[in-house]
Amino acid sequence: MENATTTETSWFGLYKHDFRNRIKGKKILEMGCGDCTNAAVMAALGANVYANDIAASSGDIVKRVNENFEFNYPIKFVEGDFLKNELPAGSFDFVVGKAFLHHLTLPVEELFVKETARLLKDDGEARFFEPAVNSKLLDDLRWYIPVKGRPSKFNKRDFAKWKEEDPHPDRSFSSRHWEKLGHKFFSEVSTHPVGTLERFSRLMKWGKKREEFRRKALRAEVWLPAVLNRSFSRSQLIVYSKPL
Image 1 (cartoon, helix red, strand yellow):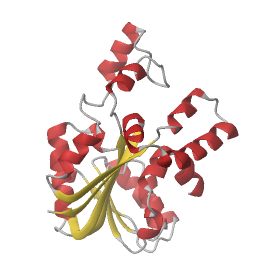
Image 2 (image 1 turned 180 degrees about the vertical axis):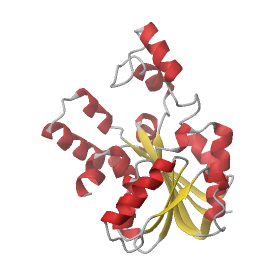
Image 3 (image 1 turned 30 degrees about the vertical axis):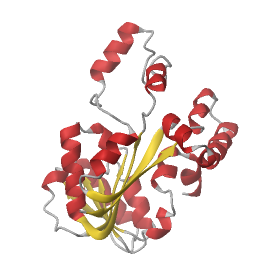
Image 4 (image 1 turned 180 degrees about the horizontal axis):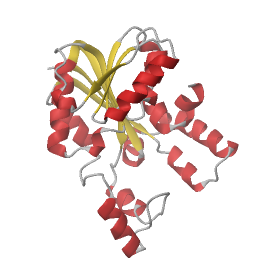
């Protein structure tokens, strides 16, 4: 856990601001729990976790995890469409999503955030870790750099095939978008950039030096000027609180 939250961007981002110590005994709903790794981690940290996913296979994972680990609160699986959850309003201290919202179209995303506000207690908090695209120039350039699973845009035929099969909708990933959306349903909204310096680790080979660079970069980038950090961050933590 210590290694993940200091080295891996998604874990570092979602668990910023002492999240791991704030959740003990708290009731948490995770949307899009997938392989249930984060749900299991939160339960191991003492949280009362409700894990939602449209895939029934996630429920099988929850069952096996509960059988093999004695949590203070066994994980509860909420199967099906998050928008049809039928859970009581004001039930949760936290609603979290780890790289989930960006899979949604904008109209559906708005419904998800509205439902999040309904489910949270008055002093509850929503936390979402998502990609950040706040620089058009950087966004245009990144498509020409091949990464695992995605060819360079210079390779027109392979890139077109990848784009056709990409499950992510064409939509905004800007901090401004998520701030504007949040203010529709919450009185307090903030975004926290992650990965401005850490993104350069992609140029390095896997190994201890790469991991050490990532750890130092994530720790150091919080001291960068806000405008630079916001413009060039790779990811972001989105925090919504005080539902309207």
